[in-house]
Image 1: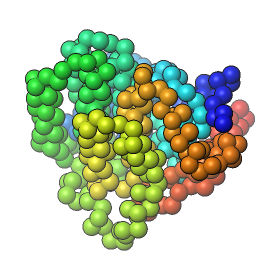
Image 2 (image 1 turned 135 degrees about the horizontal axis):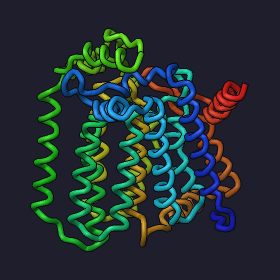
Image 3 (image 1 turned 120 degrees about the horizontal axis):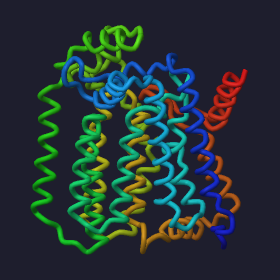
Length: 402
């Protein structure tokens, strides 16, 4: 039974199409900059003292004030560069694998490329420009470094610098440290390098130092001063009592969602179901891999990240981040000698289920396009998601032209 087709480079065509949609959206954001809801959060900076996730805003506002660049031009340029790198590295990472329905099922899952393109609570698909896009891109950069560079000292210290940068860009990076450690372990294993106690000790010291630093300054920033400076320097009309700003300085203990009135256990069950691609990757690992250290690190990386679901409401975003990091880690492990992993998965499915190839290809096609997630934990999934993405981008195009 033939389950691959190497004559048609379908993967490259789909990836190129999706990249065009992303870049088109960024240009739409540029021409409608003042209408973007998320700008007020993305421009948070250190004017009022240290604040979590303030580095991006500090970079953008400093470049504008010191060199006279317009805010939206800096904003657009940074995001364009980020996504050009992101899609190119995706191509480099995934192109080596044999293509079949299981490959397309995981790579083009609604939880990966398509989720940020959904506009639910805002007019524009503003998830594209959120900080997690940089976390995912830099995670990809670290993986490609591990694939291409043999100097372990360079790779190790580059990883530390990437984590340092990302932790100030987006504090959620702290919960992603185990994923970076897993990638480094795979790198050592692929190159037959021994584990060094010094590197492990240094990584742990760095990890706890970053946590202590962030917790020490948590909630200490002067939000009123930040908003005042943004309004005066860039002619915005932000309000310091906006929910987004008050949430940034809110004590972590008061953000635990399980104590919120109306929270139901059914929400957890629902999102476990939505996370089924992650669960499938875990099961596949345990079927084909005997390396207990890798399996432990892989599983603990996922479990460590789950903590964030207890302190914030936008679970769809967290599922997107978690799946992205899980998928990349999985693919990196199987790159090289095990690049036929998706062929093995497909052969196992077709042999056990005795299912027609055309039928299962059709199922994967519909599966990837027909659903996606919305935003918060109490919302159900979004049906006919890809149709809505296309419709929404046609509307953007019409507004832009006419």
